[in-house]
Image 1 (cartoon, one colour):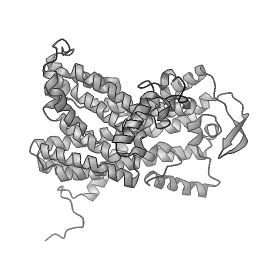
Image 2 (cartoon, helix red, strand yellow):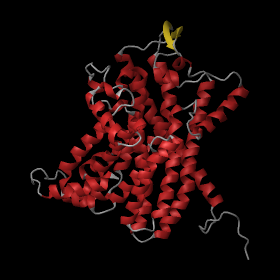
Image 3 (cartoon, one colour):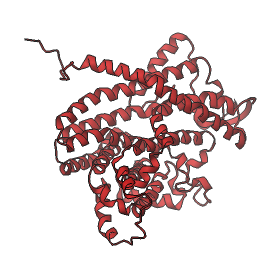
Image 4 (cartoon, one colour):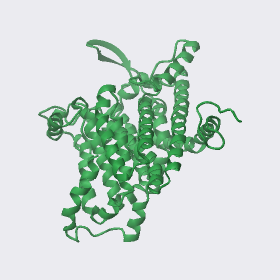
Length: 467
């Protein structure tokens, strides 16, 4: 919601800014084309997907980077500093997924509404309510089945006995019998779509129920506001944005409402005349906004008092912001919204995020999210601990010290090679999933739509008797 106020705040002082500071890198035609293009959202989503994988790798062998500094009086390491620590900031990139979900899902209905085609917008929203559900549930079930099969075949045994924290904690043991295994499979499917629960076979799927929740929020908000004028639609969306803080406090969700409604507000803003008006100032505005945004996204979940910059944000948040118990998600979410806002204002950032490699990553971002955990628990673990013997170590569990056999982490060169092998295998697999498997989910979704909707496009709850 702060995006609209920021636009008005920047407009007057920048009107007097030096032309040297505002000189464009792109020519005028290229800037106009960039401002009409929304593919940058796919590029940014691709970056977010890779960063989520990076955050899980950090949790495997560089957990100290989760903290902004080792202690209150210590000196931070290079990758513990603001912005440089972003590969460790999983919550910030998940928040960006929610924001982009709101932005992308709202863009077409808002375009139709602004063009006076409200009926088409309402019809599309009704269809999207079914389509979005199937396009989340079907791939998640397939990914769970693959991971479950690997687990029951013993493919997670090395990861489960390793010293790499994240894959160790997310690698379940095979079920005692095939009867138990089938029950565990369906229990895992249920856990994906249960609040405050985790799928034991694919821990990253914890976010999918919140993505579904966010989709329902987006569709409900657009159904209620699509007939309004843009001005009153923004006012209503801002009210929902503010109300979502109370919903998060009551329900315990990871700031879903503020992020998806923020994405819808940004979509409305991107369709207005403001980006074009401010584009000539973007070389001045956007770098500043993006730097502030990336710094906010760097705010740690743990021990923010250990570094001066995060401690200052902690004290400010405790005094002025809502949800003080969720500052580890609130600051990164605000930063992610500000980052998206800075891109909307800048044709240069839009062009940068619309490069083919980033667009391809955006296309395969959901397969990356679904498959990376399985690849890390199998191929990555096999390569990382290749030719290693189990070593007896002392480990503290719930205050008790135990002797355990584990595969110890190798040196940095072998770790880097293992990461390279992980991406070399995972990215092509995500592409194959996108090209070969996703169309089957699309076909099943289309069949469900045909079954649930009448052929003439009218929507009915119960069959209507023909006269």
